[in-house]
Image (cartoon, rainbow, N blue to C red; front, side, top):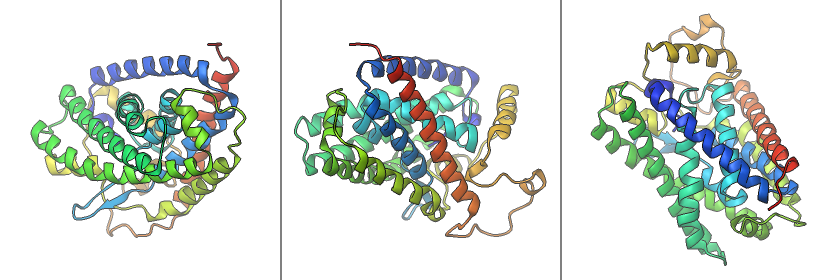
Length: 344
């Protein structure tokens, strides 16, 4: 659900950037009163895990489309909404800058669509109320499933509204929304299952992590080594190898755009869009999560369908480097905030 710049006008993109910056500043202020240094490595490792997990698109049967994990709800449950939102912003920033996934102008929209609704709407209003103060396996599963589905529906509808407000694409509102909502319902169900599985793993290993995050309490002296080691192992496996098995079908947003306009990717000749595209081309070390191709190769026509599984050293490198970058950025943010922690 990473939006490209071609869907967004400068006014909408700038407004989303401003709102996102305000939410980041507010979240950072809140985190300073509740973050202990022991949660910092968890921010980095969870960010790395969500980055790697987002590389694996799963096929939506019978549609020709695919989807991937959003991860915002999972981060909110394990870190609390404020640290979760900051970690989600770190992931999407790394993806936009170094992997060309989502536009630079649209970065604020993408952080809102994938981070705001899950961390600040469905986590407190659905998940916490369903799970309450005494989590059980059943409550965690149903809470994660419902919150993930509603969060993704809100994010998908937000994409449609942002595109409509921008008015620079030719996507008809009614057709676009009727395609976006059902396909992201299917994606949301899978996200709910994955989120529940990860939360149950952490809950069985260290239930205090989830309970303290829900109560805005520090982790304290609880050992989180088992959780950290387990998440690192899964992240390396996912980003380094399982990413080869990602579906080659277009994701839910590209699929919806193709059926609404006949094209999976839209273009624009706006000067700001072109300038940001050139900047992103320079910063993208692994465009489309692979090796950076020479200019001549980029214009070569495609003559065959992409192989599956896509066993590729560039994909492995992108997965591992991206996870490392995300770990470093989210961890650095957590370390900086805990270093200058405010007393409650």
